[in-house]
Structures are given as C-alpha cells and as structure tokens.
Amino acid sequence: MIRKINDAGLALIKKFEGLRLTCYDDSVGIATIGYGHTRTVDFSDIGIKSITEDQAETLLKKDADSSERAVERYISVQLNDNQFAALVCFTFNLGAGSLKDSTLRRKLNTGDYNCVPSELARWVKAGGQTLSGLVKRRSAEGELFMSSADDAVDNNFTSPRRLDIPEDNHEDIASGYLSDNTVELERGSVDDSGAAEYLHLNQNVPDGYVVALQNDFIALGYSDTVADGAFGVNTRTTLMALQQDATINVSGIVDNNTKDAIILWLKDGYTRHNLPDSDSNIVEYQPGVKQMIFPSVPHFSQGDPRWGSRMLGRSSSISKQGCAISSVAMMLGFYGRHCNPGQLDEFLDANNGYSGNSVIWGVAGQFNESDGDKLKYSRKTGSNKKLLKIIKDRIKKNLPTMARVDYGTDSNLIYNHFVVCVGVSDDGDIIMNDPATRYGDGYKNAGSENIIQKTTRKNSYKIVGIDYYEPVN
Image (cartoon, rainbow, N blue to C red; front, side):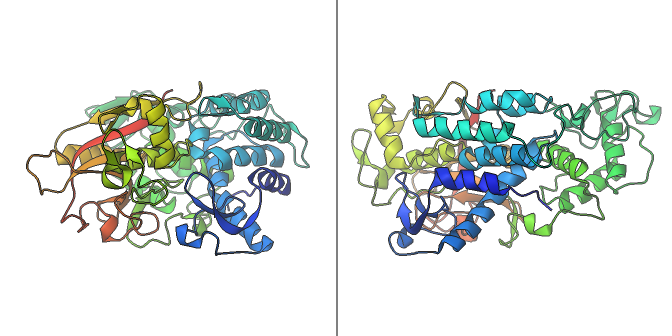
C-alpha cells in the first residue's frame, strides 16, 4: 500500500492551491477545478461544471497519489509523517521530475535531513523572477519537514541492508548497482568475481553488482538460487517477472525505473507474495497501453481559440503553423515550466526567439528558467528504426520526446508536423500528444488516432527526426 500524505500536508496544499468549486481557466490555458485538479475536466467544463467541497478533497487525495508514489520511489531514507508530507507537497506543486533530478534528493538520500529547508527555498522562481507566493510555499514546506511528528524517526537512521552486505558494513539500500546511474545490467553482464565459466560474457560490470541484484531477487521472493555473479537467461526471466509485478516496462534490463522499484520494494517490505496495491497501476484504465510517461505530459491544441490567432514569428499564426511551439509548451509543462502556447509565443517575441517563423529551441527552453533548473536541447536524425529506439529508451526513462513527422504528401518537405511522444502501446507503437487537434491527448485517448504508426490524420505520420529537452545536471 502506498504511503499517504497526512492531514498537515493536505492542509498545506489546500492553503496554497486554493479552492474553486466551479471549473475555470487557470490563466495558463488549463481547465481547473477544486484544489488545482485538471485531469477530469476540459475546456467545455469552464464556467459550467461544479463540485462540492467533499468532492474537491476526494479529487485532491487522488491527485496526490502520484506525488506520494514519487516520494516513496525517489527518497531512500526513512521519513516521519511530516517529512513525507512536506516532500509530497513540494512534488505536488513542481512535479516528480523536479524531485527526481534535485540536489535536495541527492543530499537527503545521504542522510542530510537538515539540508531540506534550504534546498526547498531554491525553488521559488518563475520566468527568472522570485515569486512571493512560492517563497511562502517553500518556507511552509520547510517548516513542516522540520516539525515534530508522532512517529518521528532518528535522522541518523540507516536504511535496511541487502542480503549481500555484511552486518558490519553500513552501506544503505541505494548502494552498489542501485545507486549507479551509469550502469544498466542486462543479459551478458558479469561481475569480476563471477564464476570462471561466465567470464566470456560480453559486459563486465563493477564487482558485486550482479551478485547484489541476484540476492535482491532472493530477498524479494523471486529466486531461491545461489547468486553466481552472471546475468544469464534465468536472471533475465526472473527480472522480467519482477518488472511485470511492479507494473513497469518489462524490458529484461535493470534500468533506473527498475532500480527505483527495487529500492521501494525493499524499503516497504513488498515481495512476490506481498505485492503493492494493484490500484497503483497508473495506466490500468487504458487497455492496450504498455507504458505511459508519468506525471502526464500536458496537451495543447494549436487551434485553441485562446491563442490560435496569435501571430507566429513574422507571417503565420499558431493555429496554422504552431505545432512546434505547442509541442515545446507540452515539453516545458512536463518539466514544471507551466505555460500555454500563447504565453510561450509572447516570451519568444520578447527574447528574439524566432528565426522567421521557426522557433529557436535554446531560447524556448529558457522559459521560466532558474539557476537550479536549466534545460539543454538536443536533436537527432537517422533511420526510422534508430529514432524509434531512442524514443522508446527515453520513455523507459520517463522522458518525453518531440517527433518531427512526415505526411508523405509533399516531396519538397522533409517533415510537416511536430508531436510529443508520451507512451508505448502493447504492440510497441508510440502513443503521442498531437497538437493538431483538441482530441490529440494520448492520456485521455490512447486509441489508434493518437498512435503515430496507426493514425489516419493526414493519411499517416512517419518519424523523420526527434528533438528533446533534458535537465542540466
């Protein structure tokens, strides 16, 4: 069962989100109701749909699920109820990606609890300006984190140790292969200390990594075989069984999502015979979906009347040629840089962000940038097969990608349109957020029209290039 935020944390979120019982436009082009809830309302509900205060609280608790899950996944030290609640409040406001990539996370996971208020206080800027509302919110979260709780824990707590760590070794649960983001274990990986008959395998990894993985399988109830330090067929089969039970991508590779799941299971006592609540499967309601990026990537339609008529660059409009700017706005929203295409266009106009009608990607990535929250832009070209592999690898890492697609209708054009890749279907196709239509939200409709390889919009889409942003470490 996923740990839940306490009443003090809920009260803090309520205070800063505010309560609106009738659906409204939140000023960045997103239909909103209750305590900042957006998932079950759309433009047609604005000014019409209403809820009760009790219903608003129910929606808030449901919305907090993903933030609770993120804190459980990314924080490997023990937290009391107020500490947990404070981090959920922070994540609720800024997104799981901000927590995952933060210095706060790295410091806290070493046992530095006292760093949290000052690290929270760094996240107070929007558009390069310090906002008093964010200063107050971060201060309140810091105070909650440092306040006492009935189940307060010793801040010198050492997390449970894996089976392969000797009793006199005080490494925490995120040591070894679990904390090494540079190594993904897969079939063919072998420890330096692996049995001699396996040393011909093709990926030599740091000593003890595969043994540690295999012993974690034993601890989690997936194996009763003595660890041998070699990642072969049996280890891969065992891993895939765990990935399936953990409702993550069943790849047979120990990627960062898999490491996060193992840390969470070891920390909370889950095993093959004591699985987490199955209701935590975030895409269970969407048949045919294998994996979706979460928290969800927002969707914007370039033809939305609130910004569709804005002049784009020198001679066009967002509704006509705004697929790129709309896709960039979706990407920035995923990273907590909340803006709609109209606001991003205004920013680009003010900062020389166009070359003709084309977006200058590096300038766009500076929207709402702060010193500790910078994004770098990358572009890749190549064969469709190569680009699909990159997109799927990024989805496995919970990262969205913009795709340049060709309609195949004009031989003089290399590409016609931009979409954002947000998931993978059961048959391996790419689920997209398509700015061409208000119905292009791949989270609300993962049917064939929002699958790149199956859509009939403009006859078909073929991926010919990709663009993406990533946090600067």
